[in-house]
Structure formats: C-alpha cells, structure tokens
Image (cartoon, rainbow, N blue to C red; front, side, top):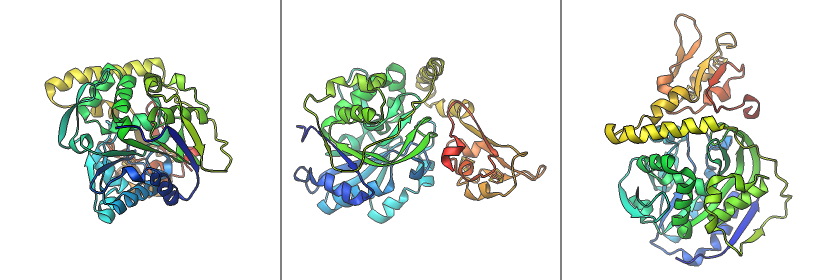
Amino acid sequence: MKKIEDTIRIYKSKKVKKTVENFLSLYRPFFKKGQSVIIKPNWVNSRPDSTGATTNTSIIEAVIEFFQKIGTNVAIAEGSGYEFDTKKTFRVLGVDYFTKKYRIKIINTRECPVKTVDIGGKILGKISLPTEVAEADWIINIPKIKTHVITGVTFCMKNLFGLLPDKERRRAHVFGLDSSIADLASYFDRKTINILDGLIAMSGEGPVFGDTFNLDLLICGQNIADIDRYTCGLLKIDWHKIGHIRAAKKLFSKDIQIISESSENMHLPVFVLPTASRLYRIRYWGVFAFDFIFSRFAGKSLIPWIVTRFGVRLNIINEKCSNCRKCIQVCPEGAISVNSKTGFPQIDFEKCRYVRCFKCFDICREDAINIRGFSRPHKKQLK
Ligand code: SF4
Ligand code: SF4
C-alpha cells in the first residue's frame, strides 16, 4: 500500500469530534464501505483518561462515529500492560460503554484467535498476531502523549505493542524491545493512521503513574516514526535518546511536511523523562529473560506475580487515616475492608494487584495511602 501523504497535522482544540472528523475526512477517498477498521487505543491499565494514562473517550467515539457512517466494520483491539489483567482493566475502565452504544466488538489481544504473519522485522519475524488485526484494512492508532519508565516515551510506535499477544511481548522484551517496536511500526506503517492524544498528557513516571498536563493537542498523520520524532521535539525531548525512535530511522520521511491547523500558541511544558537507572533496566530485562525460559516449560508467565510483588504496592497508614472510608466506596475490586482489630481500612493486595487503578489513592485527602515500588504517582499533581 502506498503512503497517502507525508504530512503531520497539529490541532490544538477542545472541539474533539469536529477536529477528528476534519482530519479523517482528508483520507476519506481511501476508506471504503465494508472495509475492516481496528481502533487501537491506549488502555494500559484502569486509570481513567482524566489521569492522562489512557486514551480520551471522546476521540474514540469520534473515530467510531466517522467510520460507522461510512459503513466500515469497526472494532477496538487492546491488551493491557503485561502486569495487569486485561478483563479487569476493561471492566474498571467501563469499556463496555462502546459495545453497548455502538455495538462494536472489543478484542482482548492477549486472549483471542491469532494468525501467524511474517512481519519481516529484525527481531520480530514470523509472529502471532490477533487474526482480526492481521486482516484489518486500517489500524486507527490512538496513543497517548506519555513518558514511559522503560522506553522513555510512549507515543505512536510504542502503542502498537499492545496489539501483540503475551508470547510475542515476552520475545520482544528479551531480544530487543526497541528494535521490536520499530519492526512493528515498519510492518503496520502503511495501513496505520495515527491520532496522537495529547488532550491530557503525562510526564514523569509514565505510562501509568506520571504527572498530568492539559495540552488540548492532537498530532495526526500516517508517518508513525516522524510523528514520534516530531512530538519529542515539541516537548523538548531529544529523540536520539529514545531507542525505538532511533531504531526506526529508516521510516523517517525526507519530505515531511508539518501543518499546524491551529493559530493557538504552541508553547508546551518541558516534559520530564522517567529516571529508571541502568540497574533497574537490567533487572527488568533479567525478569523477562527468566520468564521467557520459564514460560516455555510451565506454559504460563510469572511476570504478573513478580511485578506485583516487587513493583507498585499500596497499603494504608493508620496514623494518617481519618477513617472517612471513601477509599472503600471507590474500590472497584472490593479490595478494601475494615480491619476488625484496628477499626481502620486495610487493602487486600491479592484482590488489588492486577488492577491497581489508584482510585483509593486519588480520593484520599489525608495522604494515608502509601505506595511502594520504583515507579509511583505523586500526590500533588493528582489533586
Ligand atoms: S480515604 Fe484515606 S483517610 Fe479515608 S479511610 Fe481511606 S485511607 Fe483513610
Ligand atoms: S485497592 Fe485501590 S488501587 Fe487497588 S483496586 Fe482498590 S481502589 Fe484500585
């Protein structure tokens, strides 16, 4: 398939539906009735879109409505971060809203029929892909503008990683994450249209626990690697420091055109990249390497177990707690209950571990919920 245009379009607007319609209309002659369209949001975990962790619902709705008007078959495909439970993530995020309102299918990419495809990459050659993703005519990629503790940033290219089944994710983590992301971007490049969601962006400890910024920004176009490189520039991040963008250099267009569709001032805050040390990265890689071998024999992964034991964990500090019990009310997993001995709420982490939505943390006004682990949210930015 030939690339439609070598253009990045920047929109700074609160009128999401109109903006998305205007952008997609530019490609309208290439969309045909009966084609299959897969929407790929970022639903990495169950934190709501207001935190900047997940794709803004209004963009997804605008895309669905645009393609349903044409008569295409639209579905959403996503798999949560490896250490979260995708079904629980979907339930807490309330994504059945899309199923009920638009009657569209939501594909859990970690538990669905797959097809072997040779994507011809450096690391990812013959891989399993969700069948409907492999056979789609178009992928509408709606990632977030976010930082990422391991890959530095997660914009358009990294978002495609969520299309991979667990087995392929493990392989990518062990044999070269950056090159694997570039492989995927290269394979999907021509049939992907990107709407990079910067309505609410995330800096610092992304992709889940970072600080939130309202930017009202959408960066759109087909050139997946160029958009990521350009967005780095806009946020004053040196793209040379981002391994997967470096690995995708061959995708850069020589004639990229930038069109700002907005007269608003494009002054943006300076984004802070996460501070994962080399040791942390080595440990992270080691866990995946161990799991790669373990899962071959055991037929299951140990990563969720490991990550949730040594990663981000929550507990309540009784000395700070006012016993307002709001945390109990908001917990979607029923993971918080009153300890009969102390009279204070306590978290049953077994029930929380694969969700970790932080609704309790966000609602607590006493700073009584303690978070342990390398990467964690900062209270002041969330209030
Ligand atoms: S919301 Fe905070 S202060 Fe209120 S009961 Fe829960 S931990 Fe205690
Ligand atoms: S304990 Fe807190 S983080 Fe865990 S599921 Fe409940 S509300 Fe979410």
